[in-house]
Length: 157
View 1 (cartoon, rainbow, N blue to C red):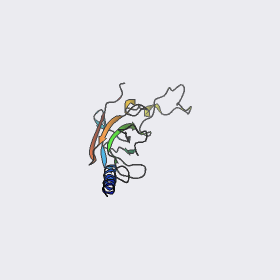
View 2: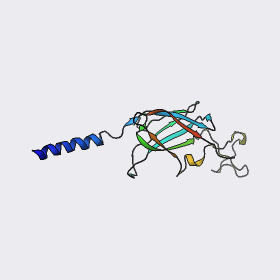
View 3: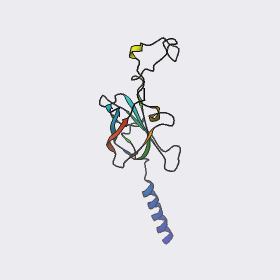
View 4: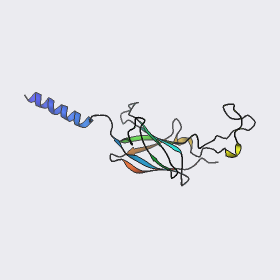
């Protein structure tokens, strides 16, 4: 009888600590600034980081900043927010926002014609915010957060 009780208590303990239904998503929103000014049309992504080294720690979330630099995260399956815990945060300019400068003698990198050089502007967000090894760590608290601040210093010219 004691074995049955201990086994039942063990099952309850394990299920209580692991939870059910997958990760808990909580509301996450905030602001992106570049050189102190709100940054429009940035793509903000949060990817969970596993404390145990699991290469697939969970579903990431993303959002796009508005005119005031504000973003709200959502997963690709429609969950609002992000999973609780530690994340790798990457921020990059939207493709519509930045036109890569080019050599007018050779045209664009894909071999197309020369775009209007007067409209060309370099991406102000440094590679360490979004490159392969870039990004910053951020911990999403259990209650979520509505004032996550990311202050980026632009690339040196």
